[in-house]
Image 1 (cartoon, rainbow, N blue to C red):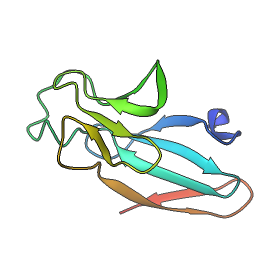
Image 2 (image 1 turned 30 degrees about the vertical axis):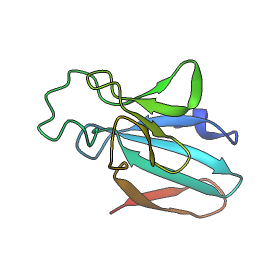
Image 3 (image 1 turned 60 degrees about the horizontal axis):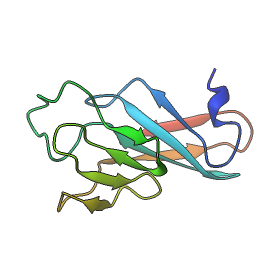
Image 4 (image 1 turned 120 degrees about the vertical axis):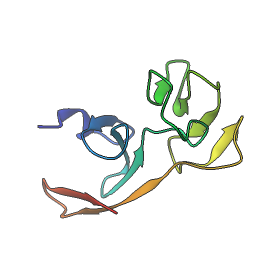
Length: 101
């Protein structure tokens, strides 16, 4: 049901977490998942969760604080001292990805 994740370097949104989860496929057998709740918005008052930068696919933007985070590893790029909340992932090598904390 997540055809967007078929290729390496793609991402998909999934339900869960505080403001949703973004899953990024780093390699054939490695996925990484982050909460879309910005650490710069602890109260969750920003109307939009983190989203990929259309000009730099490997970064996520907080539209309220303009902080930027790496989609590759969740580290802060600008505007934050804190990285993203990462979830554990287990891929069975065929068609099932488990995301948990």
